[in-house]
Length: 95
Figure (cartoon, one colour):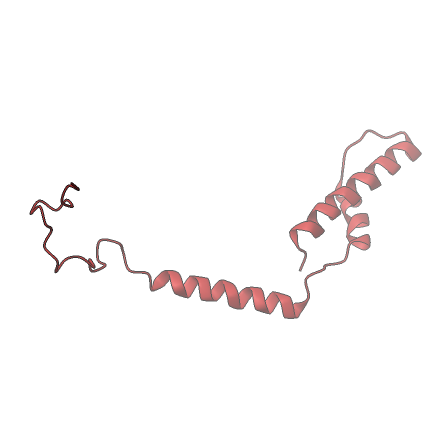
């Protein structure tokens, strides 16, 4: 698996391959699949399978935690059993 930094390097390498090709063969600067194939031969993935499994497990834990979140309207109020001093739900004015 390639990381974001790997993908950025892959694009840079493809651009350089295109530039070399353009200079050597007097071609226009158009990055093609062939340039990306050259770049893929130079840029190896930096994310190991072990790291990928850890990222997958972390992602699954985030998904599971979002499913357990209680909506704010459904959450019990911590002050519901305490009457306010002004009787209107606002705190009493300070003197």
